[in-house]
Image 1: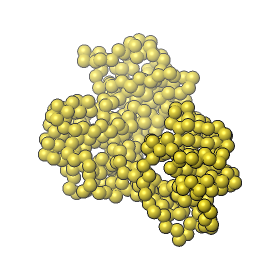
Image 2 (image 1 turned 180 degrees about the vertical axis):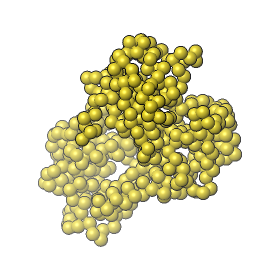
Image 3 (image 1 turned 90 degrees about the vertical axis):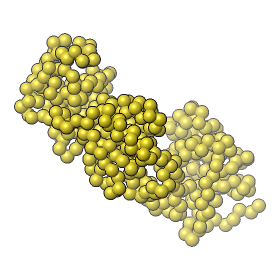
Image 4 (image 1 turned 90 degrees about the horizontal axis):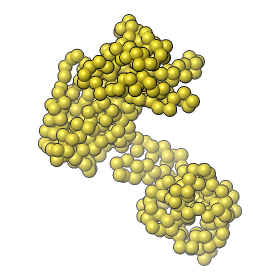
Length: 415
């Protein structure tokens, strides 16, 4: 069989879009460099019987082989390597090898994608992305144009600006979504997508408020704010609200600040919904215990300085009989302590830590309204933090970090 004359460009060529089901079928990748490293994960996800032919690979590709995700043949390509293959990807930097693989693919009637010359290939790799179980693939002949279109479509699906509500697959139920520390850009992709699909949103005060303004007019937003020393919606009432709306056939999003399970009572809400026979989806969120210090220039761990960090709820004081925290053990740990909901108890907590052995000059950072436009950081020590918080008028929400990590990046952040 004579190979066809190669095209000089992809202009005017119209590919036939099709999704290949490669599970259990032999796929050969020739070349183990950066191109293969980018393309292999998607091929692995198909369940294909993957064979990689290359004298050398990148460390990431080597790790895929070591994990058994593909079979690596550490040698150059040989004629006959495509026998029994359904699909091949050529990704070497040697034009002669690429041409030889293409020629064999043509003889064996194996569709062949080439990273170096799309015009000489018999298959093009689309710019692809996934959202909610759907694969978006774009073919234009220009990889940069394809990628730009792919990104626009997938981003629109993920942030809800490109919606197809009539095709929603999940129906009635509840999603417990961690909205992150406050910045609306820090919600997860999945969380934002499900939020855009909600019929009812039950939102906490610490959930990213800007996202609520983007919801369609028909979405009912219920304020479940638990403002300290202010209006209070009992947890039982929140549970009942979730259940009633979901049982009425609505898709209900419980939008919470941080992560649903980090002092967020998400577990209680899940149990209540599960007992009511409702399907529940849990979407983890970026916890303020880590992200807020990071946004203020404080890493909760640092090599050679700390091997652990402990997150403690400070809503109950150290001398309160309801406290479940072993403050003596916390004081004796050498790592970082991160306190949430502790603004009004920080003086008593600091005194207890010093009493049990933490040095009074241990650095402390208080970060108020972290990751938002109102973010403010105030520094102190264990010996002074109570007075500093009062003098500076610190109000919740604030994250308090105790430990040497407070100052480790100070010089870099002053530049």
